[in-house]
Amino acid sequence: MVRAPCCDKTGLKKGAWTPEEDKKLMAYVTRYGCWNWRQLPKFAGLQRCGKSCRLRWLNYLRPNIKRGNYTKEEEETIVSLHKTLGNRWSAIAAQLPGRTDNEIKNHWHTNLKKRSKNKPAEAKEMSSEDDLSPNDKNQEQDTEETDINTQNPGSTTQIIESPARTLSPQRASPGDISSVDHNIPATNWDPISDDDFAFLDAYEAPGGNFWTEPFLSDDYFMPNDFLAPFVDPDHSPLYYGEISSPFGFINMDDCNLC
DNA sequence: AAACCCCTCAACCGCGATACG
DNA sequence: CCGTATCGCGGTTGAGGGGTT
Image (cartoon, rainbow, N blue to C red):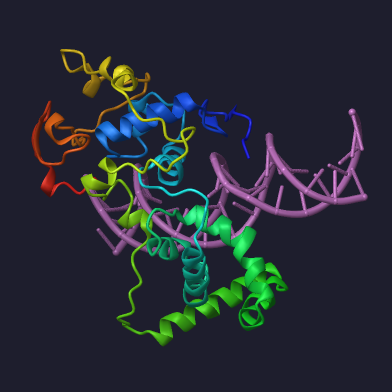
């Protein structure tokens, strides 16, 4: 469940996220968006790799995430989509608003897989998969995917893009961020108060140090073309429009960062 | 009460795809 | 076209909780 925090050789933290880290990430992404996952941890003051931040945000902190309590409809959808799509969890998740591919994948392996095994009609496909060696499984998956592709060449079947593409804050509409799902357990979703931005404000002090020296490490380097989403307080919490920055005006409509 | 086992799920890892210079 | 950086996806791991013996 919760892994003991540890550090890798580069000093980056690994393992379970602490509430403080969550808050920092949440506050940063909510305020500035995720313009570059790799650079983000430096700006957010996190000793994490960008990949880890991205995963944490997408699977846990992102607004509108539903957790647990799968409805019957959702489970049926997962099972039926899995029959057609195979292990394309992101595609499946795209059909289930608020669900992440990781969560669906876990739910499948822990619940639905067994359950579907018990249903004779569905068990045919599922149970055979279980008895296969890893190689066989791969082969079967390849076959399955090939079938999908051959069955639907240029198909009009609605296979929505992965949630990471459709729901990721990188491309999410401002509404995605602003409409918070308060069903998220309090332990996971601590509403962000102004205080939570305090650590960010420290870097926005007059002089613009935040954008030029954010949590700078000795070897830090700011790309010349650096851009970041800004927040218009009138369009809280995120606003992507034409904004000014230390680097001039940025028309966020032309900016595909988020 | 203690030991063991099983289950859950957050997080990591590796790789392919895509973007960019 | 090529090399590099970054992103996104799917598979896998393993800590910890709960159930069973």
